[in-house]
Length: 187
Ligand SMILES: [Cu+2]
Image 1 (tube, helix red, strand yellow):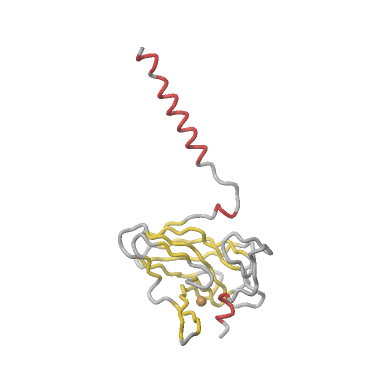
Image 2 (cartoon, helix red, strand yellow):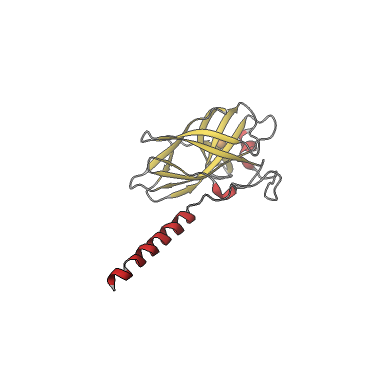
């Protein structure tokens, strides 16, 4: 009896393994399939950048970062071939006016914390752009941690004024009146 029953669980295991493999089949290429990155104890998801208007010398990129480690970690942008300078900026009120400034010593992420860099908040600032960022292109930047780890991240470029990742050029979400980063940097 036992001999007859033995193959059954094995078959089931094989079927389960096949199902698992199916679940790991890559998603169709699209907005949700943004690459994930790991640098030190930091997980980086949904990197994206905004296209820049003609003649703009600055651009911005965004991502979501989670610290899966047990110690605080600091994230910085070391460099990007697309720009002269790459820094993480924060927004802060100064005499009732919203201004941006570089985050000194890197952006700190507490253990277990998730931070989303997005328009109007923390952002990766590219200064001295060598060419406009065009929707559909990919921006590359090297991110580093205070612990010395580094990773090259690809930021798919969304439309000018896009409010979030995966917004196609000319999509409903592309609003030019967003106060955004570019304008504020012109002061
Ligand atoms: Cu900035």
